Length: 387
Image (tube, rainbow, N blue to C red; front, side):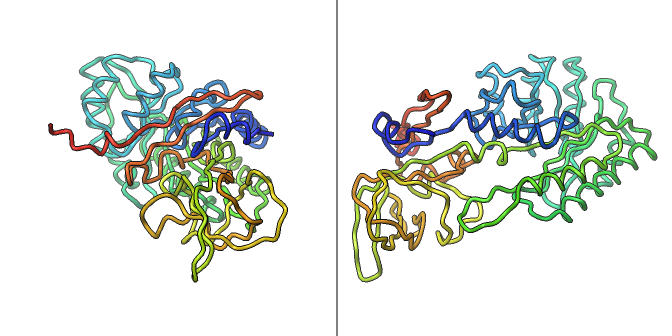
């Protein structure tokens, strides 16, 4: 049980708390359900602050930007666990990687242009690499089936080994029919590459987009869902299967702490103003603040429940976290603890709006807390430094 009251006294609000014990338990749960056949790939974009804690627990890291690569490098994460991904790979960055490191696990290829760039640079630096070809799901990411076949048919580089395919179509997938259709699509292309182009396919990296249910009242049997997904994946005949997971690993470990700083009432309702806001709290699927996330509040207070609109500290009418929340009477200084914010919330929000400070970030493990990022002023980031 996280002692949120003590954390608030020590660190203040707004702040994020990431429960590493919960995080490791979640990975263990996924391992138990899916078994040793499936490698787990952690998408670093979901939350960089917990990346190091996962090093011994997951098989790979998906890295989609130079900044993420820099973070993982500074965390001393092994290059042998890194998959360099991303729809745009700068030549300068790839040159730096290929000239300095010979132990990066894999690169993904999102276009013929990326392949040609890697072909040229691997020859230049005499660097052998392994790649996965990304099959598009119908958007700007990856290549269409024909482009992949054209690329494979002309592939002759002795520096590049094509290991297989990557496929990811998005997050929060609830439909088993959709997952089955995606697997069938990838298998069809993989088998045709083997049969028609004699490509020795080794691997399929698949992003299942496991759903997280953020809001009260939503019913979902996650264990049954995972069991059905595993049955589909088990039908893949011979290829190594890696599961690229971000949200599903990280979401449950995070909490967002924000304090009531003002309370007001007018003819339109009761309003509790918080020192946080929508620039720091992001829930996938929230609609006009009508859904109620899982939360706690401290102190707990027994009184008649009344309705509040929980609003943040931004100067926009859109900064509403929850509308018409029925809760015991609030007082200034009360703290809301919003749950399941371990994935994306700390990096996805419009954090520079109004030049407010970025929140503190705290890791909690084995009964201890550690501040891994203090509050960060953003005014200098928005300052026109032309003096």
